[in-house]
Image: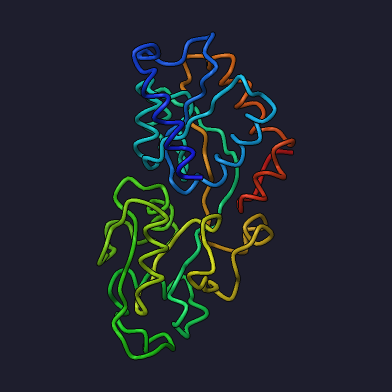
Length: 270
C-alpha cells in the first residue's frame, strides 16, 4: 500500500504547477497529508472510494500529524490527518476538527519478552527512567530500551498526555513513523514502544494495560486507557472542493464504518 500512495503522491507533485494554490473546485484530486498512524485507515477508505469514483484520485502524504496540520493550515492539502485532538491555538488559527475514528495506542514489546501486562503507572515510570530494568516489572534481567516517536507526532502526543510524561520521557530512539517503531521493537529483545493498534502486527507483542487488552470494544467503552482520536483537519474559512467534500462526507458517514473497523480503528459515525 505504501508503494501505491507514494506513486499517487509523485503524480500529484507532477501536477504541482497546476494546483500550486490548492485544489480548485473542478479538481478531481483530493489531497491528504499527515499522520502515519492513519495510513491503513485512510488508505482503505481511499481505495474503496476510488473504486466507486474512478474519476477521483485521493493522495496521501505520510508526514506526521504536526506536518499534516501545518500543510492544511497553509492550503497545501485538502484534509490534514492528525492522530490527536487539535490544540486550542490550532482551532483558533482557523482549523476545524472532525473525529473520524478512535484508535488504541498499543504498548508493544519484543515477542521474546515474558512481560504480558503493565499498569499505566508502570508505563509512565518506565518511560521517565524510574524503572529501568525489566526484572522490576516481572521480566528478565535486562535494561529497558525506550523507543518512541519524534516531536510533533500525534502518537507521541497522545501517549505522553495519557501517561503524564510530557517532556519527561528518556527515549533511546525517537523514530519518524509507526512502522519504524514496530520494526525496531521487533528486533530488540529489551525494547518497548508504542504504536497505533491499527498498525500492529504479530512481529511484536501487545501487552495489556491494567489488565485490559486494546480492542474495538475496549477502546469504545473506555476501559482501555491508552487511546486517542483520529482527526480530520480542514480550514474553517475555506470550503472544500466538490471532490474533497464528497470524499469527506463519505468517510465520515456510517457507510464507511465497516471499512474503518476493517483497518483496525473504531468508527464513531452513527
